[in-house]
Amino acid sequence: MTVIAVSDLAKVYKRGAEEVHALRGVSLSVNAGEFVSIVGPSGSGKTALLNLLGCLDTPTGGIISINGTDVTTLPESRRVLIRREQIGFVFQQFFLIPTLNAKENILLPLTFSKKQVDESRAREILEMVGLSHRENHLPHELSGGEMQRVAIGRALINDPKIILADEPTGNLDSHTAEQMYGIFEELVERGYTVIIVTHNTELAHRAHRVIRLRDGHLEPDEPCVCQDNT
Ligand SMILES: Nc1ncnc2c1ncn2[C@@H]1O[C@H](COP(=O)(O)OP(=O)(O)OP(=O)(O)O)[C@@H](O)[C@H]1O
Ligand SMILES: [Mg+2]
Image (cartoon, rainbow, N blue to C red; front, side, top):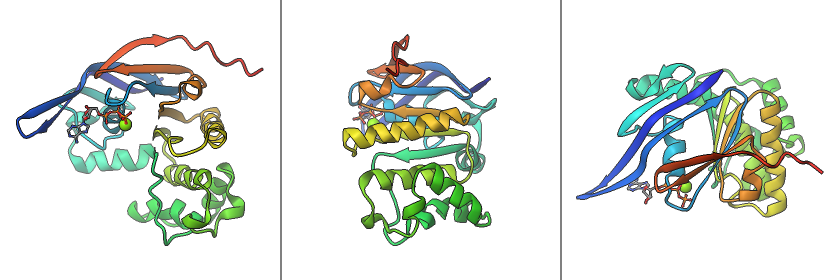
């Protein structure tokens, strides 16, 4: 089943008289439960693409369909709901609230969606991201990897089925980055659809599929030659 279908997607940023063509006609589709990596040189349009997939931004041209709904023509009020209910975001910079502990940071999106705090769900998520022993720690009392685990937990709390991550291991050492990929792989095993932008080509190949962007264009899919866990 296709969860994300993108057709001829274009994004032009305007800066005064200057136009930056970040995406120049990208088409792709992602199936439910798929694990996709997006790689490409700096400035090739990876973040632009991810932000559009996550309804954080609107395209200049083309169509994005999320679970069968064309989100490009929806009013912002409907897009907010899709973003909140169907998509979880993880960023390189974690973006945790410094005065809230790990559990409170994870629960924060519930406040915005006016949902009741579900303590057992919070516990379940803390365990899923391997942080049960750190729930009362403030961000400054956590390691980088632990902070990113909190951010993953926060992305999961509204129970979205699509997880989008923009260089989630960019601020982590290679060992911690590998552990983080382990969490994403577990999410895929649980049926989530995961799309990760990364500069780490070795980790990228742990996905089912690697999508390569260059200058706003998609390069042909690479068959994955990895999956050899020896
Ligand atoms: N808000 C903006 N205004 C103008 N130009 C922008 C804006 N955001 C991105 N761009 C430009 O669009 C192009 C694609 O940017 P994008 O952030 O998607 O690259 P990227 O592949 O994520 O790069 P990196 O690996 O460095 O994060 C770049 O040329 C960038 O300068
Ligand atoms: Mg980027």
